[in-house]
Length: 130
Image: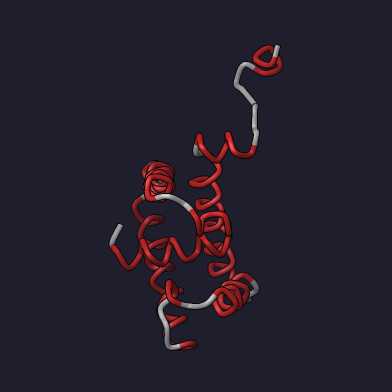
């Protein structure tokens, strides 16, 4: 992932999951690697669309607010994301929800986050809790 896309993704992560604002470098690396793993199984065309959508979000932020997505304050970044999420253009809405889903996957599948939340589910089911 290129540095501009990485900074845009991190800005989105902070908007979607505010706890990521205090994430360690290791947590960011794991978040990005989980996203990359999830995307590796998808067609190359989808990965290109996702990268293009991140660039579009960044370009729109520059046109509208004269700042990159990564340097926007939380209020403006949220307003921009809500505008895309409520857009009549279906691809924009899907793009926002897709990015949000990937970020949630990257954050909430980390062992440190799972432990902090107290989540104790196991593939073994209820037997694991006994």
